[in-house]
Image 1 (spheres, rainbow, N blue to C red):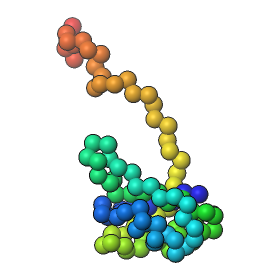
Image 2: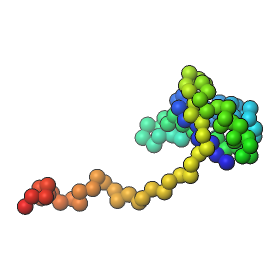
Image 3: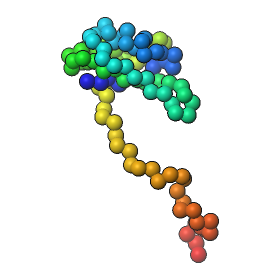
Length: 103
């Protein structure tokens, strides 16, 4: 039972988010992903609620609500998509004699 919360202020904290969602039930977990390169919050988060009923109520009440000068996007989180393994680099095969297919 996880909720996606988008369009968050970059200054929001996990405690801020927990406080808002606690009005709709028991908050089990809050995550605010951090960008690997900039080490800044990414403007979205995930809230895990205790029951489906609490989750549904929070989504209904908070989707489209204005909070911290932002209009929230709140919905049921989709499962994380599996990424294909990276082959590394920018591709191209490393052939320095490549001439765009002309020979």
